[in-house]
Length: 207
Image (cartoon, rainbow, N blue to C red; front, side, top):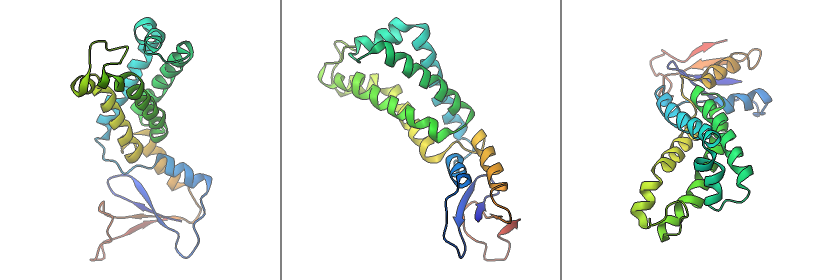
């Protein structure tokens, strides 16, 4: 099996040469943690992860205002169940995003979390029917009250698509998984652009 390896960090599958590709558990593990995102993706992870982590904790420390009470006021069914459940997911996924572990997997429930928050608590602002935001209506109020939710949603979508970046546990796991993926396998080192050198300076092959 052949992998492309870039000098700045991050690996990408190239192809099976002369064989039909077969997905193994090791392949799936590599795909789960694979990332070509720049190193500064850590800034997005810190912002998104800290907000989720803090909001999750506050659902337990301030239940009437930000947890069960808020869910009940918003008209969410079974607030005693969904508020703590949401808090647990936000704490766990926030920590995973912060350290860059299983980043894509952790981003999925947070995307669902933000979509539900926007649809249930913020969207009714448009017609003045949001229980949590009495007296507010229209696009201006909707965008103002939704600014954090929208930022969290966009950040989570970015991490789902791009991965954790090179300053992450995912990147370390990816390198380790590739280096031990298959006996006799090789890792090709290409320029970051992904193009082969025409002057004979690449690729570099590590067996």
